[in-house]
Amino acid sequence: MKLIMENWRRFLNEGAFDRDIDLGEVPLGMYRSDVQESQYTREQLKNNKLIYDTIVGYVRGDRQPNWRGEGALIDILDKRLYPGYLEWWGGKAYRGMIVSEEWMIKWFEGQFGPEMGRREFKKASKKHAFNLYKRFKGEITTSLKGVGMLYSPNQETLSGKRLSGGGHKGMESWSKSYDVAKAYATGIGGHYHQQVGFEMALQGQLAGSKRVTSCEIKVLSVILEAEPFDLSDLGVFLNLEPLYSTLKDLKPESSIKEVPALRSAMVTKIHIPYEDFLESYESATRCWGENEKSKVSPYITEGEE
Image 1: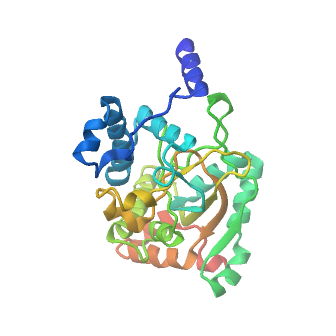
Image 2: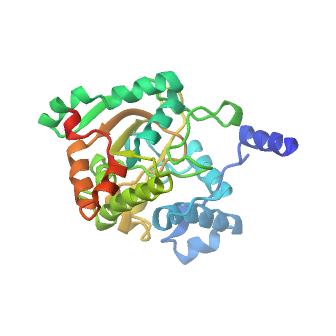
């Protein structure tokens, strides 16, 4: 086992690929002519399929990439082999979620350590700020300092953790659009599957609470805002914009404005769309009994403001 881990670390440190991943003149080859097709080597065609399956499989099928597809895509992006086509997104990105109080505390502790993490969590959700924020925009925005989820190819020095938790996850869903992320966090203003997703998240929390009779879960919608690294040239988010217009399989997803994360992001702000969250919570739990609502309730209630 020790030898396996040492070889794996060496693999990560040296990089998965020692040469450029050649996709040919027209990457992914969706609109190549017969002449162009005949000029491709078998290796180029294989690499094209690998990268295509990695991107489209995740965006359309929600399939996590295998280690080779993930490594090949990162290699292409880092080396800027296909500028204007396969490239990192250099702007802000947003991820909307409905989370429990316990999840938030653990996430903060993972970034700052147990003592500092709880202080930062209280700062992000401080109650006395709610009246002021709600009066103007119906939400809280808190800036974070030091939540740098920095990536390192060496497992022993990896700091920060992915938001999904539980095992390796090569790609994580983020969006260029704050409104899209907000729709995923609250279900308001989004597509039907986003509204259903909010209700399913609450049902999942309720199912978890029933397994422990004394458990009462506090929930909240959050939008995390991330920015590119300041201290590194490493990219984080795959820019899908150039691919929406060239890969027909991705066109139906263009409204999501997705920028999947291939590395851990540096989160700089947390937005809490409190009024929209409360509206969605009341709508999603309208058929719940009082006992169920007491099991899974909003983290900050009107009476606490």
